[in-house]
Length: 192
Image 1 (cartoon, one colour):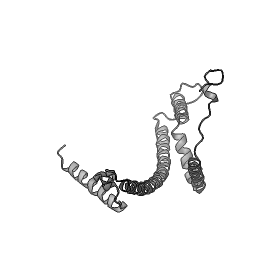
Image 2: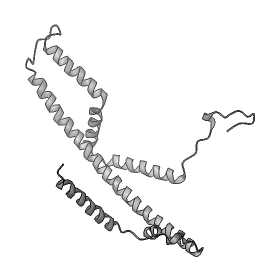
Image 3: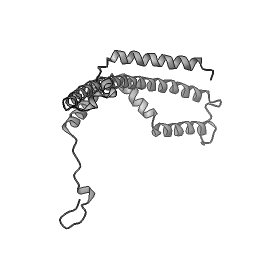
Image 4: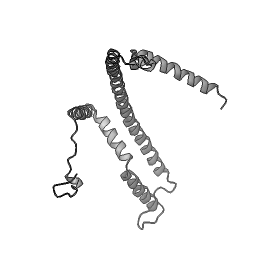
């Protein structure tokens, strides 16, 4: 783009396209849904997520480097005035083991929550996909009818005729399960 003097317009002055109202509506709905889900979390779930986030951060690593480093340095007698207190490091091992049990539990709680959210998103994706397939089939029928009225042979294409058929979701699920079973069976029977 150029201004009146023929100079190129600076990229920061160019207008960025605004999202369409449909995109804005969908984003707003997703944000509102996420806020509702956050409100529905129990205190225990919020604590588990917070601990999991902390356990998955570099702050967690730094804290443990300092904590265990000071424990070891203090216990081997390198800090003047501090007597040795855990010469076999049994207490340190016990503390670390108990912490690992709790951190693993909190991480599993957070992962379960994430799995539930992923399952809901998958259901939504499936519903949107089914709706889209239905809409596209209807549009294709209209285009085929227009093509037929105009005397074009495009509507007679076997691939188009195949796409015009209604697809029942249960038939698709049955087909996927049957194909999966065949693949699994052949994989188990192969001598790899």
